[in-house]
Amino acid sequence: MTTFVRPDPLPGMFDDIFWKYVAQEDLRLQRCSQCGQFRYPPGPCCPNCLSPESVWTSLSGNGRVISWNEFQRQYFPTMPPPYVVAAIETDEGPIMIGNIPSPADAMSFGAPVTVYYEHTETVSGKPLTICQWRLQD
Ligand SMILES: [Zn+2]
Image: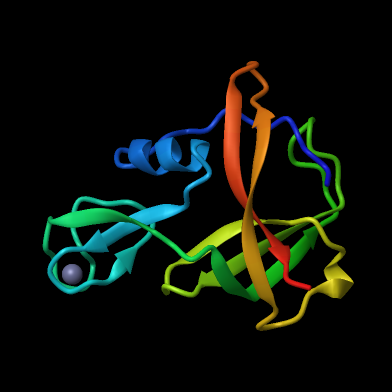
């Protein structure tokens, strides 16, 4: 699998805990303590019931491809094309974006995927772990 040196992340206000778990190879999202809905991206309250209470809960690590695109243009100096960027609907509901290390013609709507963790570094030399997705066999 190709590993790219990545641009330095631009952390959001509520992302720290998400990235801490990803560094431990544990994909967790906030799950509302009141209605049980998972939410992504991380935020201060549930978009369904507005409760501020949540618990960081592990996901199954499985989902399905709902959209994808093969990038042909080089946007980052350390990430030469082509590479696939996909929208994954996790089994728990939230939609996440990631790379799939397969050619675009291997993609199909609804294709099952499993999370994996890519250990790389940023352009400024900091270690970085990101969650990615691979097609299930
Ligand atoms: Zn809720």
